[in-house]
Length: 230
Image (cartoon, rainbow, N blue to C red):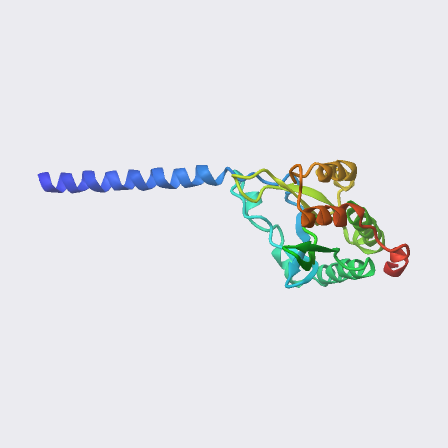
């Protein structure tokens, strides 16, 4: 009777409320945009990441963005990243090259009257150029023959919807595509270098910020590093 209809109306009201809540969550999730370099033939993304005081190349999970297409919400080939001997070898090659370059740059400075040292937070432009050469060498020696390619560059990635995309140093592993090898999604090195000149340090930045900026912009690899890679 009347009580039954009232219970049904209440249940229907709760159901509609849950539907609105889920729709709101999906809408809010779409605020994080998908990186331009995401596409169905992307196999892996590698980044230089710090662990304790040691920085090295690692295969990173693809970003779990809330893009409209489900293509961008899962890794294209997670088995390739975890189990492929080629993936393991590529990580070893990149870390070997990083070691031959002297390792990830370290900033030595003074903060609060104490001497400190820490890995720089931005990739030096000359390091980006050096790893482009490493990727070219790996492509010609191995990956092209397997129908694959890798390419290094600075890519804009939005980590949070309330912050602008940041420039992040990545090596992409993909199925071979001569058009994508032109690296149209990556920042040009000159563009990236220019962006470093205008970091928001204020009119009188403290010494540690000045030293960090200098460590990033003036770094260069040893003269014979490429011979060691070969």
